[in-house]
Length: 45
Image 1: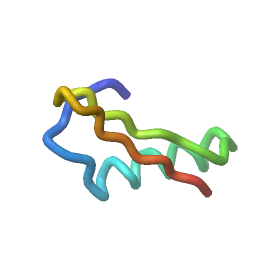
Image 2: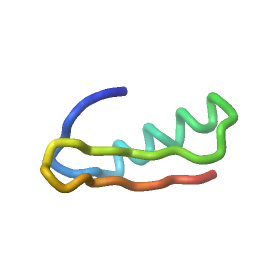
Image 3: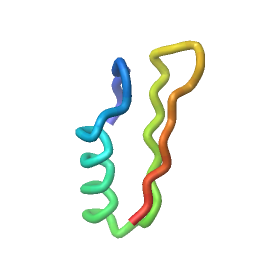
């Protein structure tokens, strides 16, 4: 899912966790390119 957002919220975290459960993957990254400094979070099951 590609989009720019003001900040990373629980909604985005929940979406990534659902993607991980569906795909069987264990680790996911949220990357937000809206600002000059990259915002990111790593999530794991």
